[in-house]
Image 1 (cartoon, rainbow, N blue to C red):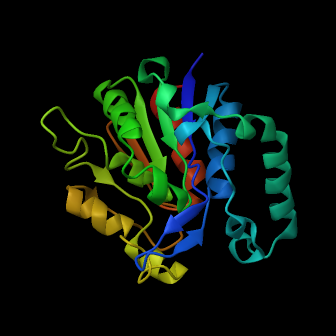
Image 2: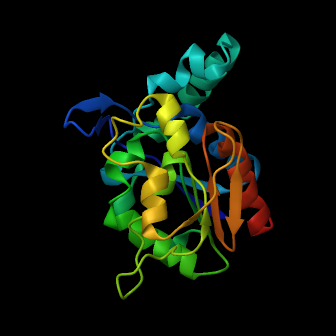
Length: 235
């Protein structure tokens, strides 16, 4: 059975440029959509967080503003989270994950990864190992793409230099209201690290597949990014 490590941030707050903290967590749809896609594909899913801490959903992701003012969509997401609550409440420890055990690693988004994954050596090691095996898929969506940053080669260089990558753009961060508040911006940092960054229209679906690397830009990209993983694995 195809095995997927679905990584979720455990951060409840995000440190901003001025040193203050903003409540955060994982973006509901960016966990739900890939979890649904991988479940439908028949994958064996392991949910993992740094420290094995139960993750917190970012309530903003379940607000009417970010769900087309569709109460039924919000309810469907809350119902789904309730259905998998036992697994979310008891995730595996990311630090215990062996990349040899998984066919793909997918990091979901929300601002949480900016706090506890973008400089996390464990996820860096996992991504480096998975990406080195061309039969496996390294994948991430939105701010979860920041988890690629700590992946390093033996000489310390970045594992994904020159790769075509997308993620939450600086334009989107500005539109979201954090462009001048965030300690750093994802697009800018990825470009600075050496990514061939390619964003699409703000808040529209955008997925890039570069070899065995799959990245999605934003919440609208979570489902197609997961579908791209399934397609790439041929299952």
